[in-house]
Image (tube, rainbow, N blue to C red):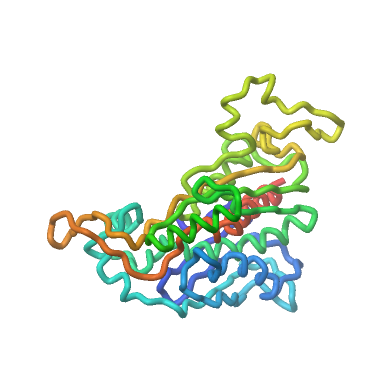
Length: 326
């Protein structure tokens, strides 16, 4: 479904090349100061323009159409919309019969009997993360300033150094290829006790949201998969004081699905964008035979560059919903 949450509940709508995309959020407490200006910082972090990002240039100006009165939330559903202006739908005219490898073109067409909007990926486009980012801004308001986020694109194509990352991005750009990466989010100040066992643990709630972000193919908390290389005596986070502070943080700030007061650490693996300029093999469903596809349009070389704020928003949404359930 296109809705998520128990108390802080959001619904997304729109398509990449449709009139608009937006989000409606139910369960927002009344009396929280909020204006369009509050969204600008995070929207700017997601906006294209830097090396390796798409040439599609949307202004992404939020318009709050319900749930606000005299500068504060009313307790009624909060609705935020964004208009689409810089779309070039003709670039996608062949996708109805010739789907992009590793994209949702084929699966969406099968799922919806060919009635899906395929332009720019339609509802399966990374453009929908704009609505998630907006919802994350509201979620952070609910969490309060004491909850602090530090999120970055930690790796690109296996490189940690910004100099090396820049070089590999330039190389992929010249070759008409794309790159994957890893986004890391660290959260301080969330406190102890967030999380609802068993199926609404911090990890399961957050992972549900994180895997809803297009191109996310892996999620890990704390030491993650590397933790499997340690023995228990090496892995276990020793408690050093009455607040629950630990000497290490292999569990990433969560025990038993509940926050333990230490820094929450989560990483998301972002695959390379499916839309590359190099010729690829697909299947021509009109002709009934394999065919070469040459993708047109404006696409990110590395979508992980713009994904950091989206991962952060997903974590904020998960924590806000869990906070409201305490």
